[in-house]
Image (cartoon, rainbow, N blue to C red; front, side):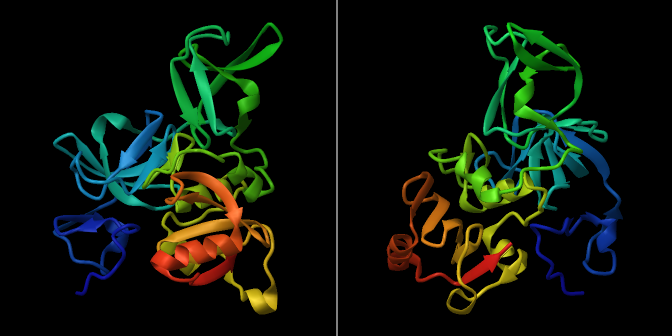
Length: 286
């Protein structure tokens, strides 16, 4: 049997594989996997169980995943959000289904030990993080949402997971202007080009693959600039890179050139990137 499925989105290795892949790949054992969730603000997902290898992507607090194996302090998992497969430190997750009720809707938000912004913050959460809210409070006119341990988040930084999402992905992405570029990042603390596209679309209720080549292959429909024209929200792809069009002449993207999320004239970006990686390879409308 020829095992040619993408390892980024299919959980299989010589000794173990997702039972849903039985008959498609070769492995010593096939198992169902157990539900789990992320328990820290940001969990790095790596291609190997090694702390010194680069990260492929990140998972956020409350994000659901499937756990296939735990060994030597590492868990081999598949994320529910985009199906990405990789290794995460065991202490960053717990087994069991997520009971999250709300999602963070601002690039970054603090968790306080109680309902008072004057308290020292306990941790910082990124947009897209999921939390379980059990109550509400108000201090000096500011509304707070209370977590199970009594800690609090500014209520206006949240929305229930069941509520309608944002309407415009480009407006979401623009809130990350000047956020540092981070290879494999998909948070308000550091983000890469495809992570920005994925997170912005997710906040509008649209799912997207994680990496730029996957997005180029599957996200939306291919368009031809000459015949279809370009509009706000279209995606421009290069080899290994992607960005939103803020308007037909402006690119909004997490740039490895500036090392932060930026906007620049589309034609200037095309000319600059061409010197290293060639012209755009594809345009898509998600």
